Image: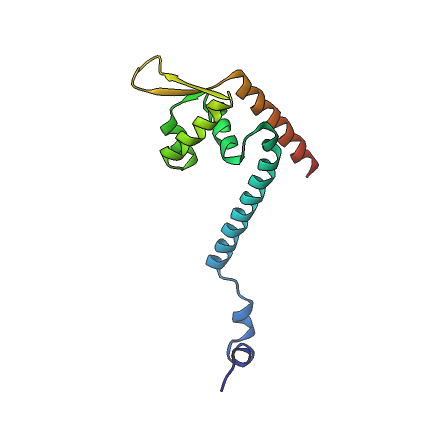
Length: 137
């Protein structure tokens, strides 16, 4: 009976074992990027919790910061989450005083989400902390 060890030793030529598949390399790269993304999210989450928010809420604030005034649907699409999820996040941010929701000036049917001054302060503080963190790496 041939065991896996024997198979690897005798049947699979050394050259073949040493060859790396481009598909395998890409898959490993994607896994590495995913792991790093989660680790960065964890670090950011630790930094922003002192402001009463988590990483998900931070992502919403950053999206609003970069877009200034956007709709909940646009935020959901940008972050690739369900609109119902964004509604919960916006409720939390609004209760903290970091955002306001109001009717669009150009179309009353549309709701715009805007950072408040308090929200801008949290973003600036978060960016400062993250800048210090990146300098220490």
